[in-house]
Length: 338
Image 1 (tube, helix red, strand yellow):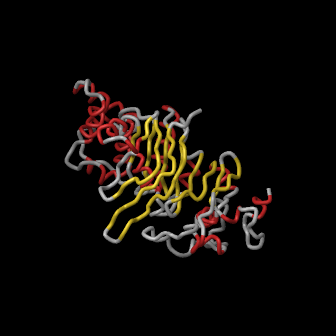
Image 2: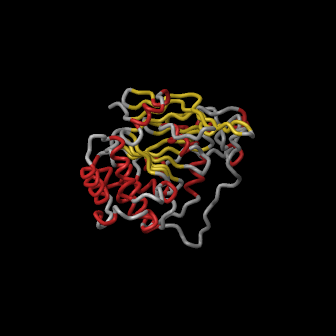
Image 3: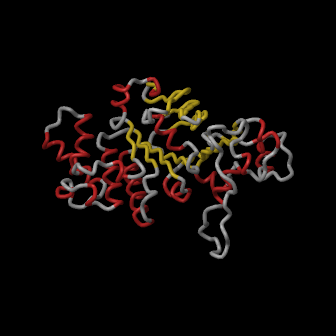
């Protein structure tokens, strides 16, 4: 089947007084119908900017300089403001990280959800819009929706505000839902409730979901496939089981070592990744992870590695996977030989 969304060689720059920030430097991936795709990585790796670029939600200082985003026969990068507004919310919706800053504190919840519905359904009456708002609030498990639709955002808890954001995103029955770290500001119990809600809604309506997070535990619970980003590039892409069982990039290995395992001894210390992310004003000529990688070779600093396709669904950008890479101090020796 054709993917529902396809991103090809996407480049996005921010133009600042200090110079050009190369936030996204050639990202390509696809999203299948009914799939939940995870995008993980540290802050500044390019996760959110990639998805903001898809919907042209970038600031005035940013610009997509190269690449294509194909959705339903259209290249979203080339659409004008009026055309992209028909896609946003109606076909592709986004759930943002902080609902308190995304919701208007002076508008009632029902009005804000209703505004999204009216924007894409001009023929609906006021009563029909309110009935749809009540239905959506019930769909995302907000109790007593008939009463709560007249509440203001500050009268809701963090978890309930995030449910409101999900209701707004689902208002026009989009084909693709992009969730940008929607559980980061929530405690563990509420986070679990939101993840279960998103999973149940995805299964019920067969929506395609891009889930952005820095939490590999969330990815393991929710996603079927995952992309690991660093330095504005995709370092590795694999099915979720393959990524956890057979990581094929030193950055992915570092991320996995830095989180606690279910069977891990509590006295055992986690292993952090040393160093800091690269300066995207002047990114490394070679692999962006070169200065933090314990296995780096000279070529890693000199030239960007190509992708090695390990199987139909698993690829990695690392020189250590090359047939010419030396075997000593190489964590991928067996993978390379196979």
